[in-house]
Image 1 (spheres, rainbow, N blue to C red):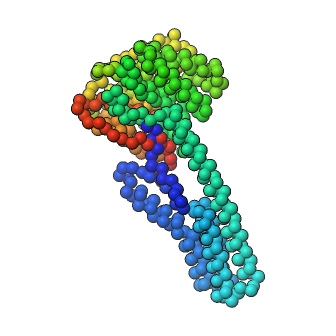
Image 2 (tube, rainbow, N blue to C red; image 1 turned 120 degrees about the horizontal axis):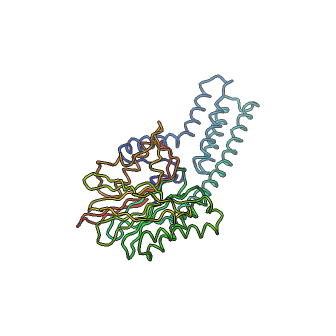
Image 3 (tube, rainbow, N blue to C red; image 1 turned 45 degrees about the vertical axis):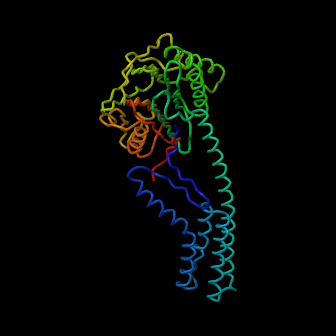
Length: 405
């Protein structure tokens, strides 16, 4: 799942707010509701303040700054109609005050009214520009979401009898896809999966992700071993690197872990090409770091013959969960520069399933970093259910990491 965590979007005249989960949800929701209410009534409050200020102060003082500020506040937050009505209300308030004070014929009153009307006109112009930019941003966001679904489609929640959950969080706010990748599919050889991280950023990284995933989806169906599958991915990157300058054929590489759970078997096979070690969580809270005996080089370095692949095998018990991740997880730092340690954080903990594991892990990383991140983070959890365990249902929302409120 590329999961987009609760990003409340503006509806009508509403204001964008950020949602949170867990124990802070109630407090955050209440605080966010109060903030939105204050913003909604702020233009009216400014007009009222200007009106009262003008009434209780000597004639040489004026409330025009309050009247001018009201439409400017409304412009980026509300509709064209509301912005216009705010400017109209501010202008009428100026006229009413000068009629009440008997100063409507003076040059100062005309100047004050002209100032408020001019600012209101500018506020209407600002509103149109902001609204047009908002529509363009929404369109770009929709295109990004569609591209994300095409390149990293949501895996089914159950594949080949295994429970599956995935998460992608972009380091850049409002980003939906980058250089991290994952895929799971059922094949004649069992369930096969890949999690990887392409060197670099931008379009070249996304292109490399598409190449690796495309090669994996085809080769996983036909290659009899994980070693052969890794060689196919190597050849695909080498071939496309000579065709596309953006793939950086000289310096580009991709770290990845290839996995296989054979049909009817309680074992797990892995080929690790320079990627962070997966974790295997046992149902009793025990945790095993699946470190390869011989470390191989990443894909795309053209040195596969010097470091031949060798699949390694581990027991995969019922109730166990395999966790694969990219280095965005292990390189997440707290305010003091300490790296996040997933093995240390998860050892001894028990989770009902892969979804709960990823939810807890994402929340823990956000607490560790304070909401900031310097790299994308992809997570893939695959659980081997206990015999007779009922089907699990979930919704898979792509998360764009945002600063905490």
